Image 1 (cartoon, one colour):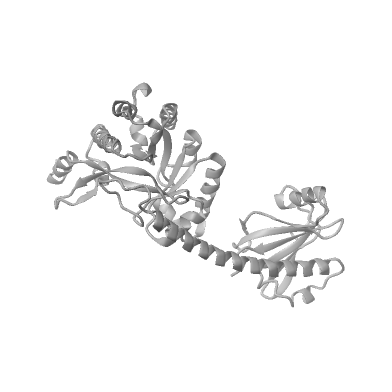
Image 2 (cartoon, rainbow, N blue to C red):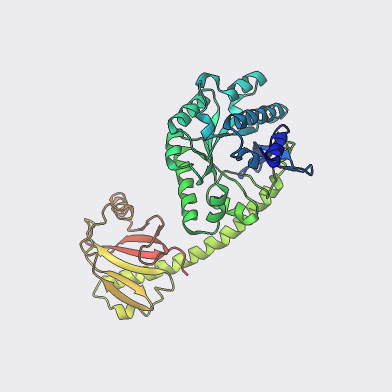
Length: 398
């Protein structure tokens, strides 16, 4: 073993926990802390022990022993906290393979010894390789004893959807790299919003880690995260803080976010009014023989209208796609005869007509248009007794 490795072993004897606050975006209160292993460097500065725990030169058994020591220290410190926040403890999925007796899980034994309310503890299963059946069994055992289970760093390493399905976590913590990529848009953004939708359907809380800027906090709000943690508020520290320590800061950020989204929504509503006027113009033109050249004189493209087409009451497309681009209309006949009755914007319109005399407009969910790559919605409305008009519009005009 070289000198550097010897130093690692000496440092390991001085491991200790620090605590990073986790904040509820709705109340602004600190609701919990994540316990993180720390050590001193050669200059006496506190640093992360992550490099030590990822060293390939240290046996897994030794790492597990050190981790349990830090975990016990963290629980001892947590006993001193006099408000009802929770504590999250990280456990590597690969270490769970070493568990031989589910009835003697070390963390449960520590909680019993220290008389800590188990409902205040969350076990974070880190994104490392491990036996999925064993992980799921351990998660069930923790839940049986009133602990909650989180998946850490979702979107990285081995933290995949099958693990979510098997464990059914109470909390999902977004991988920091995925979160930061998502703030820039693109497919990472779509993945995060898909995950947010999944969390709503399964009563699972979303935590955004690594929040370092105001804009990252605003993004966390926009994607529906309930909790945040990161250096925008505090790095991990030795001591706990009062629950309302960041409440004014959070309140100020929420006000700024509200002002921003109100301006954005106002622009969208103005744009929607223009689209409605143009769709009404389109409806009137389609009631008789229409002239595409005359229609092209109106600002369809500027308003984000991409195309329109007609269906019968069975959902069969009976017209070409009439596309608008470059200031001109052009036809594409390739989808004539396609049936769209299975799409919500079609059958919801018929359902609306069955319960109301109102001929309103039904909008689809947002989707990415195949031919243009732009974020769109489809609007569906009654043209006459036999025909239904569908209009594809850009959700955010360029």
